[in-house]
Every structure is written in structure tokens, then in C-alpha cells.
Length: 416
Image (cartoon, rainbow, N blue to C red; front, side, top):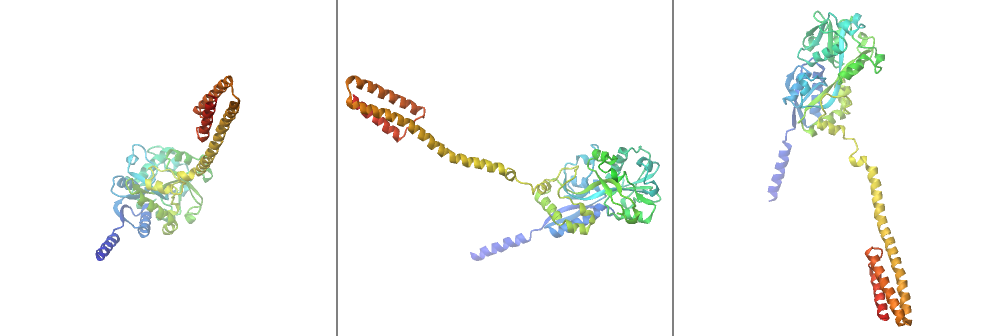
């Protein structure tokens, strides 16, 4: 019997030890994008830290395809821009997409001839060939809406669609529009290879939060944020700070993804933020506090993590509960006291009738027929009055009451 139990225990342990880690599928984005580098570093870090295997299974061209694959249930997780969609855009109705964690900033950088970097946007783009990246990518729609809001006439420029890695100023592109991470080598390479290029500044940085035109854009395209690229960020190729826009690049998950798995993913990334920053400086903006506006709802596992440090219902109302408990204890203590006080009043009330009956009893020893009748009448009146008080609960029907009744009955017998 002992050998059988030992065998079963060993079997259970062996089966438990053979369990495979949770496997989650991930997209693979075009190599020249900032998303691709973040994907690689994030997956490597999580596979080392958690009992979860992240496997890249679908190759895509960028954010909108990543979100579509996620919404269609082809993958569990994907990195994409925190987008802004209009109601007629397909992504507007992606009901299966949820935000897991904001990871890094995707900054709008328009590379143009330096001599034109101080002109208005409509003048900058007029008659120019403007590189917008892949035609099927969401960036093209983002730029079109932005240009419209900033007063650029439709048809005043020629859109040029290429792969991301070919979206550079050159023979076929006059202005290169990019929504990417600040550490994307393609931007610094463009500036380094041609010192006559610069990054366009949409406004004077002194106007930040002072009612600038970009604030109007952020109110209408509400997932965007104002951003500043500090002077000298691109070394000698940038001689002044740049006022521009940014979107957050987020880790998204399917809504049916296990809450606990999502919680563990966020916890692992947040706890190892410094390690991820060393792996990829883009990840300096990992935001486990979820401080931005997001086009899609937070995943329920993300909500669990966000609320983990918030006080519980009992903690929030601890002082109220303490006050109620104190009042309850006070009431528990005062009830017996009040009861004793009430009983004392009732006894004192009965004692007054005791005195009256004792006086009549004393007079009964010197009785004559007329006096006896009067005393009997008084006793019956006292007895009736005491019964009424007992019914009204102004006198307690206890042992003292019974003794009182016996005294009345005995006195009546003496008088009869």
C-alpha cells in the first residue's frame, strides 16, 4: 500500500513538472519600424522572466495590420500605435482589441530642407512630393487628417507611398513624414547624410500649453499629445528644440486573453523597466499608470493591475466603520444601563403604592364597618390603578409585583 501511494505521488509530481508554459502568439512587424525593435526586446525579456512563451507567428507591415490580426483572433498580443480612428475607418469598430500596457512614444518627425523648416505647413508642402510610408498603413490617414486640420489644401502636395525603409528624402521624396520612435536610425541617418535637412517644428516651443495650434489638434485627434524634441538630440544636425506631436506605442491584447496572464505581463515589464530601458531606450516611457487617453478600452487584467494599490472598500471607509463600531459598542453598553434605570423607575412607582396599601393595612386594625367599606374601596381602586400601570408597562410584573398583590389580597381579607 505504501509503495502504491509513493508511486502516485511521484506520478503527480512528474506530470506537474512536465506541464508546458503558457504560450501566447505575437505579431512580427516590418524590420525597419520602431515597433519591430520593441517587439524583439520585449519578447526576449518576457520569455526569460515569466513561465510564458511568446511566439511570433504572423508577419505584418505595421500598426493597423497588427490591430486587425489581433481583432480577428489570429494572435493574442500585438504592439501598435495608440491610434485615432474616424467612424468610417475599419479600426474604429475593432471590438476585440484591448490595451495591455503603454510602452513608448512614437514621435511625428517631418524631415525637410532646412531652408524651409521655418515656413508655414501649407507653404512647406505646396507642390512637394511627400513621403507617407506604406499606402495601406495607418500613418497615411493620420498625416492626411493632420494636414487638413492645419489648413493644408487637398491636392496641394503629391503623396508618395513607399516601404518604411525607403521613406527618405532623395530623388523621389522632398519631405519625409515619419511617426516612429526617437531612436529610429533612419531619421538620424537622413540628417547625417545630408546636412541641409532638418526636422520641421510645428510651432514655437514657448507656446507649449499656451494655446498653440497643436493643442487644437490634440483636442480633435484626442489620442495625440504635444511633444518636444530637445535641442541637440540629433547632435549637430538639430540646432533648436522641435515642437511636434506624439502617439503612444502600446502593447495590445485580445479581450479574451486571460486576466491573470495579462496581469503577470504588466507586472514583469513594470518591475524590470530599467532592464528594458537598457535593452532599448525607446522603452523609457513604459507607463504602468496608464496616464494617457486610449482609443481602445483597457484589458480587464490591466484594470486589475492599475487598481492594485488602491484602497479596498473597507480601507476607504475604515474611519466610518470605526465610528459606527464605536457607536454600536456605546449602544450595547447603554442599553443595560437604560434598562436598569427603567426598572428602578418602575420599582419606585410600585413602592408608592406599597406605602398606600401599608397605610390601609395599619388602619384595618382599628376598623369599624363604615371604615372597612371605605378602605376596601380604596384598596380595589389601588389594585385597579396598579393593573392599568402594569398593562401600560409603567410597572414591571416581577416578584415585587406579586408580593404587592399578596399584600393587597391579605389586607382585603382582614377588612372583610
